[in-house]
Image 1 (tube, rainbow, N blue to C red):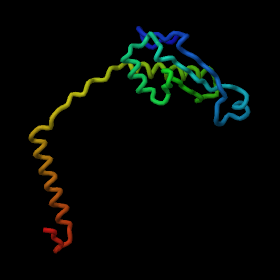
Image 2 (cartoon, one colour; image 1 turned 90 degrees about the vertical axis):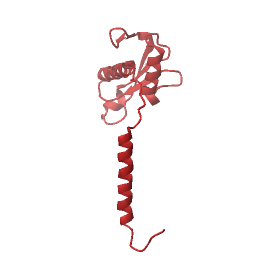
Image 3 (cartoon, helix red, strand yellow; image 1 turned 30 degrees about the vertical axis):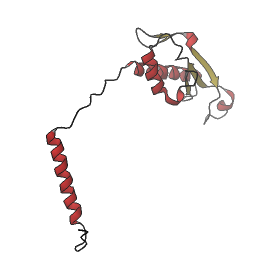
Image 4 (tube, rainbow, N blue to C red; image 1 turned 90 degrees about the horizontal axis):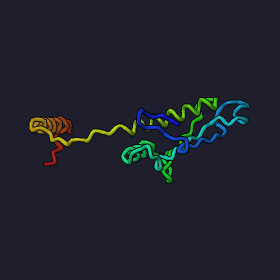
Length: 141
């Protein structure tokens, strides 16, 4: 079981781990030991997560979200299989915790009359500066 917070716990049947050979440096160790971890979490079928949380989790996961509704995390940070496994689980918990936070709704506001006037004055000043840069005698009027 994987504890996310006090109310949410991910069951073992929702998680699948497979170990593969890691790429990159490592000498002879890289060719012999399967240290990279591929953690698969069946997020879409998880009863622990609310539909709104699943939708936010899908957006957060991005490319790691599969067509079957699973999140696949690949970790090959260290040469230790156990440590890579811990890192993968920590990353999954962080993603779920981030998805649990409901974003504040954006409230559309209008610019004040003073800010609109200041903007127009600034535009006209800038226009004057640029028109003064033109070569003398090249009026298009």
